[in-house]
Length: 368
Ligand code: NAD
Image 1 (cartoon, protein in one colour):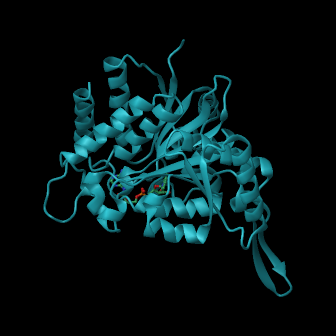
Image 2 (cartoon, protein in one colour):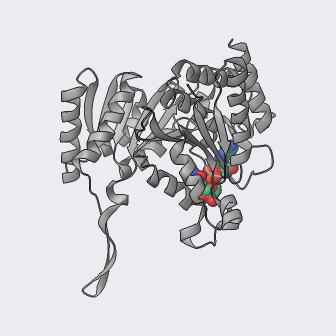
Image 3 (spheres, helix red, strand yellow):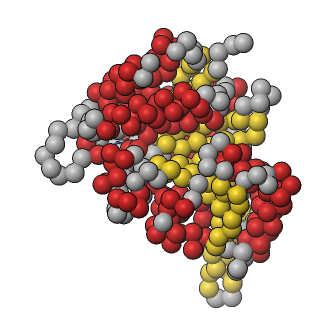
């Protein structure tokens, strides 16, 4: 069997800085666990534009389609703000998502005990929190037609269309149920079936998929506005939340902030299974290229490292190794090590990006 393959796209700004720490961990797995990856590295975003005049070269796109998983850092920065929309760094990211048909966006919201004080909510509400939001990523109101700004009589009207087919709902529901089986075995589906026909269909199809193939998973339905309230009132009631593109966009950001810093948040975007049974997949931190701290050694690499842990779990079926990485992060935080974004104003001394990466590698060593 050949090694699992990874395409690394560090991107712009702090992307290369945080990705360098992930590479240390990938190397650690090769040396200490005998788990070697075939790694190739390429350009995306502003750096790709600088070299090729486009934010994602066709050859890079072709490589992304071939590998088992793509790991992406971040794209964008002030140098590219005035570029034409069609070649902006973010277009590289959108092209990857679109052409790989990554329809399921997984956003975990996990609260490490050592950071529970960091949340804007009370400690007992968030301590031990571990939920997963599964957002439909390739359809819904961001893509539905008709869309545009039209003339109607003597004024203009802005139109977007919420549209979901049964098969689109079916596949995202299956993704959520499969995930739940690997976690707490509970799914809460959120829509607005009280006021939207697309919500009624969503609820029907999710229920049907459940009844036919996932009756062992506990399923509940909730209106998305109530879901938003429940997320800040009692988030630990949830395990997996499945929802559409628009509600998922908002609910996942809300859930993420329960846990503190942007520098801690990983994500995965998954598509249909490939010939080898692995899903098309891209893993990336939620944060952007953070131009305000680029090149200063201040970036927190944990979001990117936890994204790699998600790759271990969801692309390579190495759940135990993913847990090993997550536990190593937990240990380092429990030991009180913090990058600047994880410190209050108490005059504590932060560690650098590379020191955080090295500490996590040391914690991995200690796990053997
Ligand atoms: P950002 O996420 O880059 O930064 C927001 C704030 O969080 C900044 O103060 C930054 O210093 C801090 N921060 C972010 N990640 C951090 C980390 N790992 N460690 C410590 N602090 C961290 O968002 P922004 O400032 O709105 O956008 C900057 C650029 O990134 C823009 O060009 C934007 O288009 C792009 N962007 C890219 C992505 C992506 O690649 N997926 C996502 C969001 C924004």
